[in-house]
Length: 317
Ligand SMILES: [Mn+2]
Image (cartoon, rainbow, N blue to C red):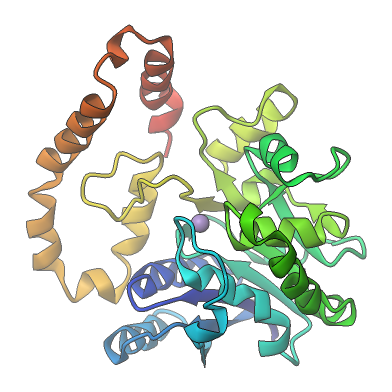
């Protein structure tokens, strides 16, 4: 049986979400593959590790942990993201005898068989990724030529042999020193700066991101169909689906996947009690928004947002 290698980076607080993602990948993966999960471990507790083991009851897979040392990344600039996002920069060295890997964020859930991503032809490029909704803006900010594109680093299909051969890790370290002050999206900016000439575009549905303003007209059709037929859903906004008051697009898919994991099954009562807060929590979010934007009612932008949230699309499951 051939193996599919995936890699995720997490600390203890995001470990349950990594677990949800792994569980959803296993659920949809074709039976002709064996899953191998490589976890870049920023201090996962024994209890979370034991829950990871329990995922094997529904389908067997291999899991390896690679303890990470945050001190090694202490010189990396932090914006609004966790330091764990930088772990992936060392992926070539850590997974030293692996040829190909799919790197995945923790704020994701699989809705289809990721062997389709695994078998995607990279056309001799080092890496495959999905274009970011704010590609043009970010390229301008970083000074990337318009012939290329700016990708979202939440899902990366990496040819690790080429990555090592082309010394990408060294190039990333050099770029980190050079562009310290430019890195608004941390490692994602860095990866884009170094790899913009060596990447190939993956279909949007491989890393489906709901973004209120979409991808612009050129990609409108592909964007809409990636929302209705995603292979992997990526919750990119600050409102994450595991938050009690979340009103994020496709939250129900997330909760359905979550309910298959020990993080729910072992704490059903706690979760049910938390659900009692859902109504007030949603209301609170709404009031907070109103407080920040008191005259939103008079703005077209606000109503455009409302229209997007209540549009028929947002109820598609
Ligand atoms: Mn993400």
